[in-house]
Image 1 (cartoon, helix red, strand yellow):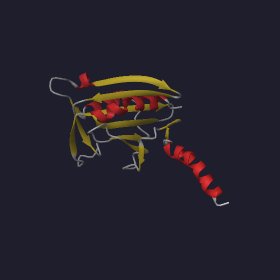
Image 2 (cartoon, rainbow, N blue to C red; image 1 turned 30 degrees about the vertical axis):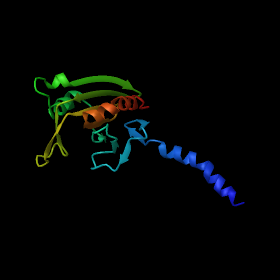
Image 3 (cartoon, one colour; image 1 turned 180 degrees about the vertical axis):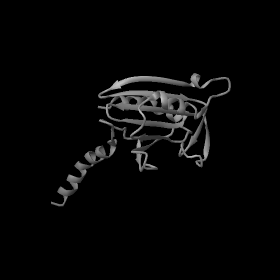
Length: 180
């Protein structure tokens, strides 16, 4: 009889492990998608963020951060110039040389992406606060996404060393495209 509980536990371990490997379900506007399991959910650093994830660094690079901001401005024409202005392109290049804009549809929303790769990111924890200290982060890549639904818009920001964001960019795009 003693072996029955041990056998039950042994049989349950693969199921428990599989449950722990599942990612976090993220709700964005009227849509949702499950984040990859290796994106570690964190407590949002402030109340403006609805979700925050740490994405593992590439070899010899720091981790990246994915932040999700609900109730954002839906118009890329207003947001993208401001976000581009936070980058200093490498010498001999313009911001438009290192920035790419793409757009697609997911169920119930329009997705617009600004991907800035290379250069120096002038990061401020609180961008609208003049007292917030600016940090210069060299060789960074930031992918900003606006998911604009009928009633609301949310923006996502994947930011980190270029090598780390490069490592996660394809999975990030596939995840955004999986919103349903």
